[in-house]
Length: 79
Image (cartoon, rainbow, N blue to C red; front, side, top):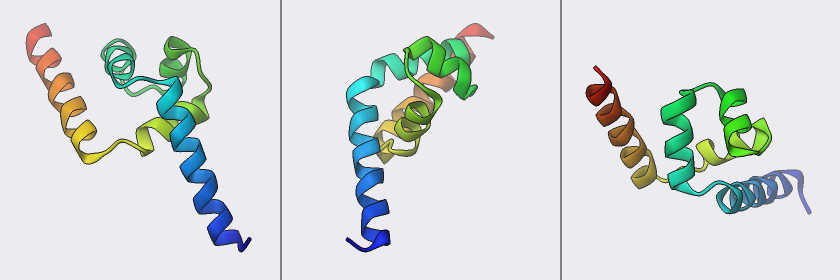
């Protein structure tokens, strides 16, 4: 398999694994507590940093919008 196809396949597998290990709601809750600190998020979610980064990189546009809305909402609520 050519390297570029192998790299693409590995990214897909990383995304799939990250989605199975980190539910969206759990990610939102962890980000509300830990912010953007990948190491703290990994600790809170019981995964490694690479899995957190794969989950964040693989967010759909809908998930990204919802995550941003929830984080913004929480900041307004706290303030």
